[in-house]
Length: 353
Ligand code: ACO
Image (cartoon, rainbow, N blue to C red; front, side, top):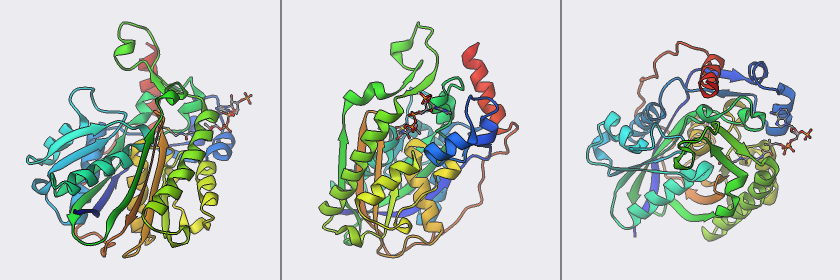
């Protein structure tokens, strides 16, 4: 059976930034509350469509892998904020990349989406249905935020991350995969105002969350997934070189770190810069960790996440030999013509009209 290894990585962070202090001018909150409760200092807000961010992250990942769009057999986009409900965001990415030999579909597993997408790539490769798979986590979740719902309006940000996953006979890549879900958790984290249930109603668009319920479940499940993925890979906790966790709250991440008795430097954290970018979080964090030299050839990595559904997942990934990109490209998103705060306010005013 073929192994599935990550050979390319990239991210796209939209330029507009909204700091906590700026957000506190339009939401009933404070920098102090957001920082102490979540660890977030600022977030990015997209001025382009989700598929535009996803496509740029994908181009960077393809360049890093030394691959061309026509090498792709499958494109999976993990997102809960698609450009449109029909068609999938993956189909927009396919045409924007010109990856005409690739099949394409989306996955919605909330913040766990990237790990679900990676498991799909692993399965496609193991069964030799595909040799080269593009897995993207991409979200424009600030578009769903209602500035009157302060419990969630301060927590999320936009961005995209992508990886190229390729078939190999070497003993590297995804070494174990743990996935789970509990639909009973649906009321604890949901979006209102979108979806067939709301057609013909005047429900406001908003992300609604029972924060403490999500927090408790996230701590338990992310801890369990980390331990189970490690054991299933045949590793001990001491062997883990870096945990790349979903970034929803530094206190959740710290609980995961304590569960495996790891030092701070074994856990990657970038939540202060981006907030919770849902399915985009892990591939964004992975590409930054690589750039910062936190991943070495042969590193033993754990990806772990928890999200809406509830869903959860953990993956043990043994890195290959290469930790630098083969190529880099200089494509950028267009310059925004509004500030991040102006974008958030403009969208909010549309909801209210
Ligand atoms: N600013 C100021 N005060 C606020 C804000 C805000 N933005 N939001 C809530 N508060 C208030 C509440 O009203 C409450 O006030 P009260 O004590 O007077 O009633 C108080 O702050 C405490 O609220 P809690 O919800 O108890 O705060 P908590 O310490 O639990 O932190 C948080 C909240 C950050 C949301 C935390 O519960 C959390 O991180 N939960 C998990 C999030 C998560 O993991 N999400 C992942 C999945 S996301 C996905 O799948 C798309």
